[in-house]
Image (tube, rainbow, N blue to C red; front, side, top):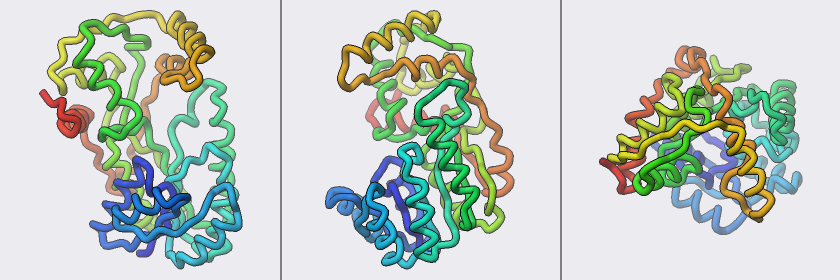
Length: 291
């Protein structure tokens, strides 16, 4: 199969392009810059230039690629869904897999939730043979934005305050998400379905931290703390920082359960995610922090 991939130079994109090559697929990857073009070329894809903010360039790129299916890894949170869908339809690409996120289920008034849900509705209302995947928090590589920050911290600090420690988390390894993306592209049975893509079972935030600590031989002591004061502190930090590393919304999300059934993905996609213990040990090893 010949795949048109958006977001191929990103974190998940690298895994999808490598796995696609292993499975014998030909890949064409959208690139906005020479840097992105070089990255996807290294990963075995042929770059084609286009910018999601320029609808004409996307139509031209998708048409020139001549692909059988679209694999959209680019975020649906920036309002580009209509451009991507319309360009695929005009280019004659019928099959399409879109990666969304389980974050759309939050009860918080997150700014991107409305945009992402609207994007999903546009996909469902399109003429494409669509599949939507909703991964949970993705981890598994030094390039992830979550646990790759936590692991070095656990090696340094003797005590760590833990807000929302009893609430459930279900992180998913990036390689397992890549497998699900390609399985969805390959499976006609996935047409018209939305799948939650998560780890094999939920665990409390405290258990997640303890498992991560064991992976790096950390003796950090975890101390439960109320969420509210940390939310207030995060809000103040956001006001003072031009590029805050943590936001109040992220802290508030710790007080929500993030547990999802994966039965449909297991049944239709042969989805078989690794345990968090196995995945975090592999990430720790990749970072040179393994116990």
